[in-house]
Length: 213
Image 1: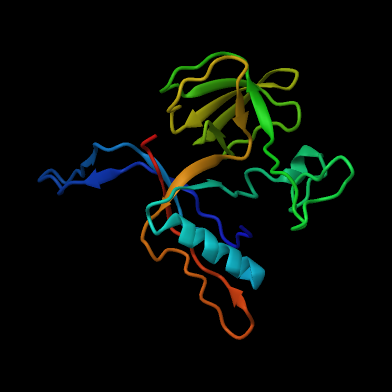
Image 2: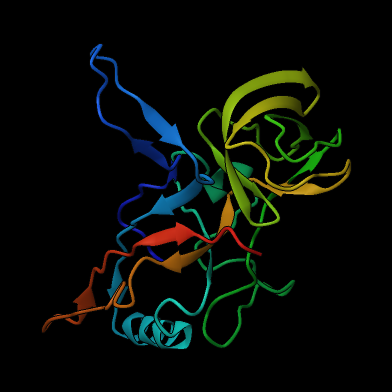
C-alpha cells in the first residue's frame, strides 16, 4: 500500500465515567488495549483493481489483513543501507517477478534475553540499524512501540516498550524492526476505492487489531 497519511496508535480502551462531586474525573480501563489506524492510501488503475480484489477476498469483516504499520519517521527501509527499494528484494540476478515486484523485506533484530508476556523491557542486537524512541516494532505479529533506548554494547540495546509484550519471547528469536500486525476492517465498506476520470483513488482505511488468535 502506498500510504499518504500515517496515524497508527494504541487504543488503551479507557471508558470515561461521570465526574465526581469533588471535581475529579475517573477513567475505567476494563478491556484489552489494541492498535488502531486509519491510513489513507494512493491507488492508480491496476492498483485499484488489485485492491478491489483484496477487499472482495476479505468479505467485509470476515477476513483478516496482515499488514505492516507503515511509519516512515519511525523506520525507513533506506536506513538499513541494504539498498532495498519500494519493489522489494530481487532475485540474485537483480531481476524481479513478472509483476515487477520482489520478495518481501522484513529487517530483524535478535532478542538476547528471554522475556515473558507482560514485559516492558527487551534486550536486542540490531547490527543493521539502531532502534529509535517512538519506533513501532513487532514480535509474532504483535506490534509494540519503543519508549526508551539504552546502548549496552556493540549493536546491543536495552529498549523499553509499550504496549507490554503480549507473547513470551525466548533468547535468539527475532523481532521485526518495522512492525507487522493483524487487523480487521472497522466496517464492511472500508476502503472502497472510488475514483474519477483520472483513474486515481485515495481511500481512507479503518483498521483495528485482532486480539484473538
